[in-house]
Image 1: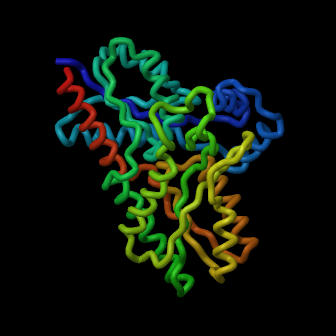
Image 2: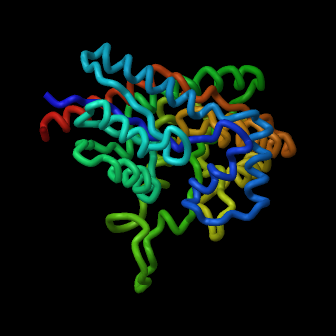
Length: 322
């Protein structure tokens, strides 16, 4: 009987502001970044103190392991990060050293573009060797994921509606990506493909679909919108609409309060603690709008039930293959 395990993959985050330059080199695969970009990221991390992404991801792993054990599937759950410690290759090596022969691998980004998923997948496969892998790279419609977001949104929306005395619009967000990574080349354009397969990348549609499902699960929502946040500093256009554009439209429509829920992130980190809690709140305030957000999923048991369900399915497929 082969020894099975689960491997959760996340983006990774540095522990200190001083580690930001090294971290950013990992994010952009060694390409040079302007010094002012590095300094701006350091500034943002300095304002929030630090990013809790690593600890929260480890907590999600522990809760997922407990969920699996309670369902009779007692297997260890490992965590590997693409851009910081514990790095994915190091964790895969450790799994092999621990005698793991089969692993269900899950990206902790429910809606994933093939370009980013490809980086995660390659990092795992480069060190896998004889380790058999079942890779779950996209799960934007999982019922328990939708339920987890709805559980966080409903009480926050109810509270803000009561405090303002009027219906409050909801803005769902996901991380933006460069336009070139999610659109196929124009007819006649040559060059290497940015992702495997044909046609446009599914990321944008999957992100919007998650938003639609969460909105349907919270009937108290009177009006909702969707935007892409955290556009990067690299050259070329990034997909939108942006959060700022959407806030402008809500202000023009006469709204003085709104709820923003990121449905592309599973825990707190700089894109929530700075981008939402500082930058977007400040932008909305200048437009006369009070912006609030629900608690992030973080240690949501419902979320970890979703991850455990995905892991069980992956382990089952490995057992059949084996």
